[in-house]
Image (cartoon, rainbow, N blue to C red; front, side):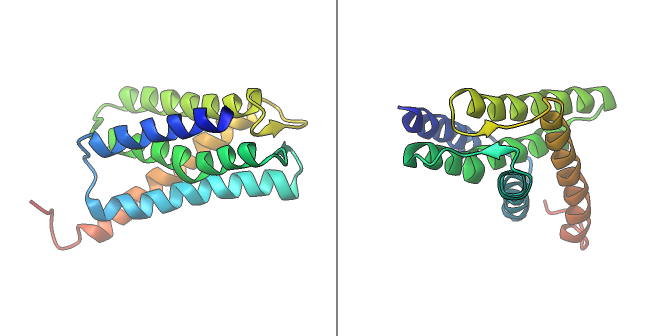
Length: 157
């Protein structure tokens, strides 16, 4: 049942992402997706294997639900953040957008906890928003650098 909920949630997020008019160039989506996936994968791997602060139950449907979240859901949310961030012009709107998406990513992480997909062990709650805030800041920095390289010859019309 939990796997079905996660498949449905991932499907809805992916369909929304596909149907949404994007402000990012198609050549930007892939590296941003890969970096967002890399951030989510490393967060999960470091906390699970090295720090032992996360526990993934050894039950195949729960493992698959966690896998789909790491591979699809977190990257979709993070790339959507970049897409909205790109068109936001005022600093206070960008701040609100950051708070909103950090809350969304933290909410998904803690939904994983309450559904038994990813269990936090000796975890301080404030670590979650800190990790996602850092991940989004890293993505913004990467986006700014990548856009300089991508549009070096001039803006595509």
